[in-house]
Image (cartoon, rainbow, N blue to C red; front, side):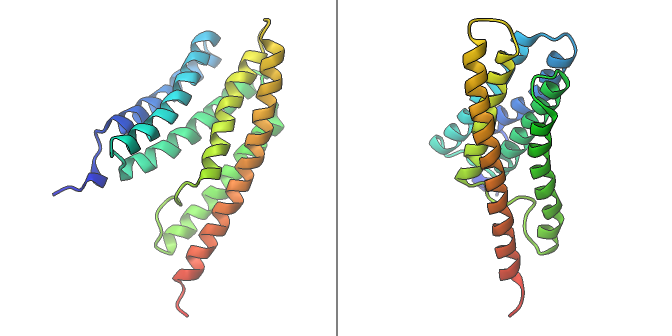
Amino acid sequence: MRSAEDRIWTVPNVLSMLRLLGVPVFLWLVLGPRADAWALALLMAAGLSDWLDGKLARAWNQTSRLGRLLDPVADRLYILATLLGLTLREVIPWWLTGLIVARDVLLAIGVPVLRRHGFGPALPVHFLGKAATACLLYAFPLLFLASHQGWYADGARILGWAFAIWGTGLYWWAGALYVAQGRRLIGGARPT
């Protein structure tokens, strides 16, 4: 008999799957036809679904192993796709992309080490990591808006850079906490 943790077809998991399917569509909209309004709407819908899937999973008792894997993967892929698309469009600078990608590369290097010591592919997500991701997911649509002409551009630029700076700082801080958490786990697994 399957436990509730083994469920696949839950509303939160379907939202995460749809969010994953939106990643290549977003990139195509940004880099192909440059349908910025549609790309922005998709990015905002992805951010909303990120909040909603977690809220529903807890409220409806639909948390699952798959959901705990899909949600951060979808977040990372949206961040990467947005960084790639907006950097290639010269909306955000390469140095910001480099800072964010470098943190993910650093943490990815630790995954085989954790597995070798018998730990899962990812450490549990903590609040600081969620806050960093939320800041970045707010920053990118605002910076995208700021790259256009309109009454909203200056305000979007200020808010977008505020979220980008805070988000990047928190992203690295959360990364340092994940490294420390991994070191504690591995240290605790060694025979004394």
